Each structure stands twice: as C-alpha cells, then as structure tokens.
Image (tube, rainbow, N blue to C red; front, top):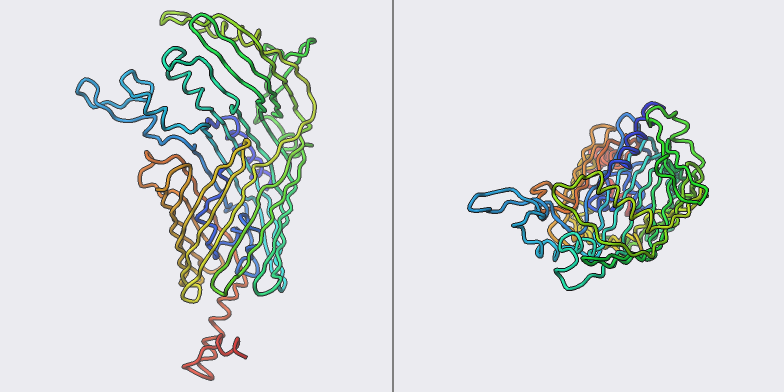
Length: 490
C-alpha cells in the first residue's frame, strides 16, 4: 500500500511541475445512478448498492486538460504558402493574427486536474448512507489576460495603444491528499440531504495574487506599475533570502525529489479542511431536482515556505533584439530589468489557500420505470474571482442492473458542440465504467479533454434480490403477477 501511495504521489508532483496548461468533474457521470462514486459530485446521491469498495489495485481516477479560448487547430493548422500546403502555427508571418486574437476570451484559463482514489468504501444503514475515501489530487490553473497576447502578437505600435492591463495574470497549482467522510440521509420520500467532510494534507503549492499589473510599452521607453505576491510551498527546494529581504536567485538549491522519504512528501504539517454539501428533492415520483456545492475548503501551508511581495514602479529603455544577438546576454538583460523593476520582500511565513469551489444544479425526469431518463445540469466553477459556467443535457439509459449508459451534449468554454458518453458494466461484484464529456471524434476542434474511469466492487445489490424474489413469486403463486407490485400495494 505504501509503495503504491508513494508512486501516486510522485506522479501527482510531476503533474505539478510539468503541467504547461479545475474543471473538476465529468458532467456525463452526474446522472449515472449505477456508478457508486457519483456522490463525489453531490453527497446526497445515495448509491443503489448497500455496500461497495474501492481498492488501490484498480483505482478510480479522473483527468482533465484544456483551456477556455482556443482549439488545437487555432494554434497549429494547414494553410497554402506560395501554392504549397503547409502546416504552420499562429505565429507564422503568413498567419492571420487578427483571427487568432479575436478568438481569445478576456482571460484565457489553462487548466489541468488529476484525481486518483486510493481506497474507499460505502455502506447503507436503513435510510442512512456512510462513505469513506482516500484520494490524491493535483490541480493547476494558469490565467493569461488578452492584453498579454496583444503585446506578443502586435507589439507596441500596431494597434494604436501602448497600455496593457495584465491584472488577471495568475498561476495556482496544488498537490494534496484528501481523506473524506461522507454521510447522507433520506429525510422522507422526497428529500435527501448529504455532506462530505474532508481532511486535507498539502504536499506542494504555487499561488499568485496579482493586485495590480499595468505595462506601458513604446519604442524607446517602457514602464511597469505592479503590486502583488507569490507564495510557494515546494518540497526539496531551498529558497535563501538576502539580508535586504529579497530572494537570492543565485543560491536557490533543489534536492532530488525521488530521494525524498515518503514521510517528507506525504505527511507534512500543511493541513486543511474541506466540505461538500448537497440535496435532492423529488417534486414528483419521476422528477427530481438536485443541488450541491463541492470543494469548499482551505489548506494552511506551514512547510517549505517562501513568500514574496512584489512592488514595481519603474521605467526602462526598450530591449532591442537582433537575429545574431547572444541569447544568454539578452536573458541577462531581461533579468537585470526584472531585478531593478521589482522590489521583492521575501519571508518564510505560513499562508492559506482555498480550494476551487463548484456549484451543481440538476434536474432529472424519469420514464419507463426509471429505465430511461433525461437530465439537465448547470455546473459553475468559481476561480480567480470569475465564474466559468457549463451546461450539460443528457439522455440516460439503464435497462438492467448490470448495464447503463449516458449520452450528453454540453456547452463548455463557449462551445455547444461537445458530445459525451458514459458506459457502465457490472459482472458479478465487479462494476466497471468509463465516462467522458468529449468523445474523441476530432480533438483538433476541442478545447478540453477529460475522462473518468475505474473499477468498483459492490455487494448486496437490492435489485438482484428483487429480481430473484419476483421470479419465485411468479413461479409459486401468480405467474401473471408481479411480486414488486403486490408487495408495494399492500
């Protein structure tokens, strides 16, 4: 168990270090009742099975990577150059930079989310359902304002403006473990309430808080007006501070991550708490409304700390670059400008970060004795003082207790052309599933890629028992009757 846990930690930390780009869920899974762990999206959802297990040998995991502005073919595409078909990028001299610029949102959010469930179980006691889960999570988001692309694409003299508002620039990345205890109760035939309480252990964090960042550029002179802060908690990294309070970049040292002990990586003193809360309400027997808030919480960082408060009010000459210039010398010039412009006050003090919260509002209408249903889900992410809404419509088909499927259509990141699919099979006690909001027809026209999959071991499925008892009833008492109907009519 310890070896598996350690490997998962290394993988999560690699995502943290290497991610170059918090949807935090696969919306297609929301209405798939045969998948036990959909309670992660709404803790009021009680699994149908009376008992289930998640084991580290066949973990359930979720992965997402994407952005809210650009498709892949907006960045790399085919175009005729001098009569020849060529593959070029948006930076090619023959590419239409205006078309690229118009496709950008006011803030481009690039995100990566990874979750793996290491161990878990759930069980029913009358009207109550209890769950327990241990998971490892990684979440990274980068926010790039549109004015940054304006500067990179057009420079300072093409659009008739030299002012660039970069206030929405940000990067937030966190690696942490989650130990969750869930409870839900059927208050009556209509109302079910649920909550999940989480104990969080942080392993690594990088977060920025930009309060003001304005850049004015010209051919002869540039000026920077910026204030903000950067907080980090990164294992195996030592960031020394000079006597004047600035970061000593030349003396930053790192130790080899894989030589770090399991205890140093996992059992840190970076603790936090989290909460999921949800409810379902049946307006009619075949119409159910649901609502939830997930990932309300914080982590208090106390280990491997560096805090840097940045202040800049500085003017400097523009940087000229020629093809034959020495690249290292030019980097040194940029570094020199940075050191002069930003007055850094660094410390090693504890700080707090907050989880990225999501709100789900759902409605599901069932047909044909719950064999078929249609659902509508509104899911909104709260991140970097902005809202990122998603809307998903789904058709869900569950003809047998051992098979179910869902076909979804979503409006995500400004696109209403995302077709999703979920499929679930159960063989004996083994419940297997795979879900995605983006069927891979053509990834060149996609902004986001996600999926969730895994294996769950479920026992005591009441639907199997009902089927057996119904057969016994027909055989012994009334071949034309229905045991369930007779039972519930009494």
